[in-house]
Length: 304
Image (cartoon, rainbow, N blue to C red; front, side, top):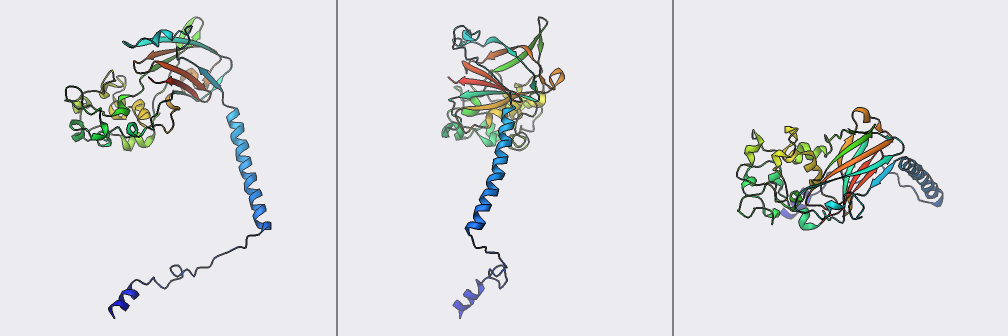
């Protein structure tokens, strides 16, 4: 009797949905139905492909190699300078207007951000602003949890420690003078990273939250001083930091550095002569700069 009640208790409701009695169309697949369907779908995708091809053909591309491998390159002097920062300048010409908006990227080749141990080498609790993990970084950050004096590193881990910190300035040469091209670094990171995933501690001034901690070993300045010109762009919500922390899936990748959308360059980069000034970091000694019109990319070719 008990067994019978248990069986009835588990019985589905006697409805058309649970008993699978809803009306359904079950077409008989024949050549006359399938072939026209494939043709229609194929034509749709051909149209999409043609549209994408035409769009891609309209993208202008300019690539400037600044690895410094060639001894005649102005940046050659920086490839053997590991003791201090080095600056070099590369001149180039644009024959026709690069239509805006123009996006400036940097990139790395043969850099495996997808390596398992590297990928996981960060502390999400720390990066969300939890002060507990400022003093006690998670084990996932090893070996970049503490410095040689046993002080906690903030932000910890290999990903933050290896943050790309080259800087670029672009100039247009007009009548023998260099005119600075404004590079806009606002909003270059993902909205979810800036507003949800990464948060600064609720401490004012922000510097006080980092008391008793040290900056990553390869950084030249602490997180709360990443952008001296904009106090709101410091700490874990610094745009360049957020872009770097979104790890790439492949070893050759690009990351957005700046946009060119303001002033005389709102419509794009006019034809003319330009100079790119690169301030090398001591982490990276070989670079390449690449521009895709509508897209402007800066490449770092080799990581050492």
